[in-house]
Image 1: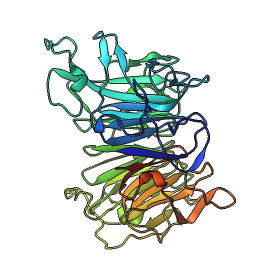
Image 2: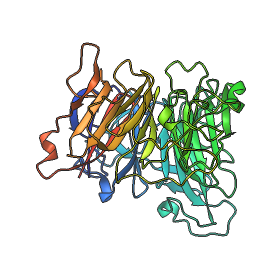
Image 3: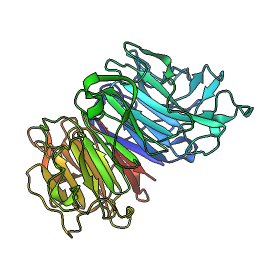
Image 4: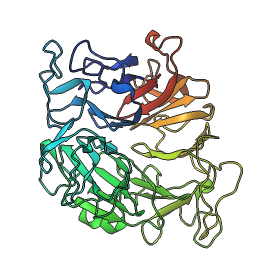
Length: 457
């Protein structure tokens, strides 16, 4: 498996060996303990998560490894580990990592190294990584927990949340004015005893985690309601706080200043009441009324500060940009959620749009900010994979092409944009480089803060 990147690269966050922006896909590099440098993902693993901060990127693979590139002046990419090849320096003089490097953490509690993880996310200046490890105080003498990752039901293990980087707004969850010293620290007493983290997401300055009992916790900036109405008054949650949602949560997505929690066919959007970009204005086709009828009762905020919606059709997930929400309905790729018994669901065969901030294209229902073409154009072919960045989107189409639309000033939507750097009202087909080869196949896409990613086998 190979990874190609294009877009913003001022800190080397594309992992392509230099710090210049590029507008065409360029093959990423991975550090090797011995020469030559590697252009394939090590160990034959596959990428399952691409987490992008403001100037750093993290890749989580199927074998639990995390690879990081970009700004590391404050340790947000993890501790420095010298390469064995003196001709291949791992970073430049500014502390930027220009090739993807594996994240390996020395853990003071167990006096060993952690190299396998189950979740990763990124704030603008920080990194959150979850590992499943031997439970502290247990009689488990097996110290080989580098192979323990994923949702392991073993009662002798527990999830621990490692954080790195800067935390000006409490976004690392370790208390006020508490830096996360290299090589990073754990969020204390989280998750609660006996529970595991099943989903994790971060916005610019806040994060949210779904637990195995369906509860949701968040930390970081809270004054815009992104951690729920009940936590707004604190303005900043310096440690994880409970976010109340009216259903069993399964997934979470974070915008810049809002959060979307979903599960079992329902979702809520938590955000600013002023609703400048319309993210709280759930489209009629997804709205759910408490009294069992269809309408706009919950398209504003209810008494608990929730804007609630429901999905009955097959879908692959809900994603968030900085100021938008995207529900991807890809035939044959998603799942049919269970019926909801405490309210009626929309059963219309098409998606209704009664606002300029709502867009339907390519089996995507999206709403929110669209001044730079961030919402899908109506002629977008049906995608099989969707990746939502800060202000742009990448879609893998059924015929193997990659489409991009939205704000692309740094080249993250390809070389062709309008005078303002946008791909608006239409989409670009991204030209694939010769390095993909005639036998190469695009199997995934990713999008971050003005960065774009294409995964090729």
